[in-house]
Image 1 (tube, one colour):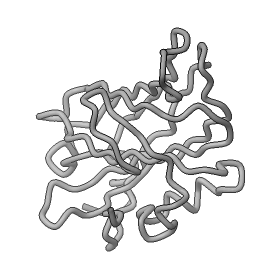
Image 2: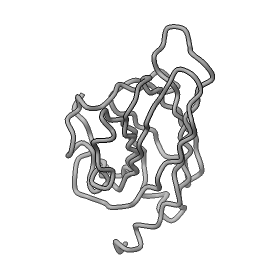
Image 3: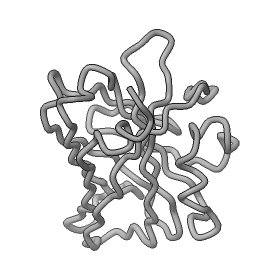
Length: 167
């Protein structure tokens, strides 16, 4: 696939911050992600990796999208996340839907300010390869209702880097 073609094959990716009031005993809020994938690249994408970085305003999203996040930042700048199934970690992976079907995900993000949300498309190959990413600024995640956020589309910029963060 030529590079120029690959930049526009993903149709879009959206995220909406959701929160209906404080939950007892938790300091996280769910972030819902709706993934829409072009069928032309559905067979290439095996998973999405989600990470949230501290100090989002200091980050240049254009630079963060050039290569995999693991090659650019230390794991300590990533927030601990949790998914709807109770899995937790500094990054969370979600398998892509069969045939490129639309899918919805939820990630709990700690309440706070000034974050950058990075969503990476990972290959279905073994070993996993970085295919591209979306970077978005989260100004605030609060314990009440959160404003909607529409995530930037993933730009396919396949790079030879290992997207796996050390545990």
